[in-house]
Length: 501
Image (cartoon, rainbow, N blue to C red; front, top):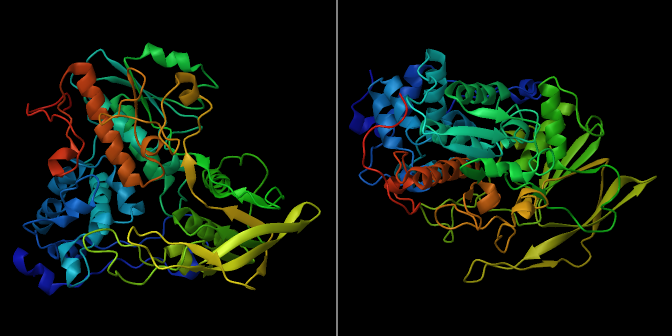
């Protein structure tokens, strides 16, 4: 028997389903995360204290109403919980799998105990919604006669397209790859996010009326001037200009961008032909440079491909295990995190400076590196590094994967053609309404804010859609995150109802 709602946090400890054992999961490219039966999931929902001031809202860029869907789950109201989840998040099955759970870092229960398993609960609710048929296409009752082009179909573009279509506008999405999804399809490995899950949601958008034109790179395959046919244009092309290393030997064969390596493997999983020279870690000594999520994905993929060894190196110092005085609650703490891929094997090192590569017959064979010493943070949180004398060393390698992040969107097509203003980092510059320097053209997601998280991209897509709707119609019934404390800076319509059913 479950306890009263008020005492659940005292009755249950935090639990998450066990993943498939390492020895089994490294032999598959499919999702390996476990699943609780419904009653066990409800127990975890009972841990939510329904705080008077729910700081999980503060942590979540989407303003997900976490106490609300937990409270509904306590009452065994799965369908209503699914509706509450979708009220603020178009794609909870994505964030429930690949979000770092910013909300959990802000959970009040986390001050004295382990936080509520918000991310898993979110995934369990939406997965059951799909299984039970709660999630259906929402087809507009009426069309406004306005047309919107969305360039790029990553999480920001998909969220915006769905919102704008539900507002009644005719939405056309242009995608340069052979199928929609952006990084959801080709940037995140299938063992973290099944591509069938991505396709299922995209099919919902198609059923609602969103039109997808794939294999079209605007500015190359069609002229950018074609976008002038639309009443509004939203650019959500992501941040795709990868950071590289300008050091001796960086042009040797065997040194590749992480995104090329990961995309090839996803194409194999989908039964497609790999593009470009074959990249595989099988029987190779692999070095991954970069300690973020992309680097972790390269580790997991390399292990599955049968690498002889995998070594991850990071320029920055090793983070602490727990919060310190520089990471006050409820802010996201920069602490040491071990991903499921890191659990599967390989070595990790921090404070490593890559100085050069050397090789034989034009192919990389060694990485030349040195160890670093970092200063304590100054009052502004900045640290300086210096090379430790006589700390140089070599690492053997046959394959080097650069997971160094991304600088800004590629600028030689749409951005250049339109003459759009850019910020100091090379991202598209917008005002508070996501409008660019060119009339009728908007930007959202990583192409505007720089490399970020899927949850932020969805937030930006939703907010940009509302501003475009206001510009086209003079008002909007689309929801805004401003009501959950975010400064999306604009009027929120109080008129009930919408163009969807």
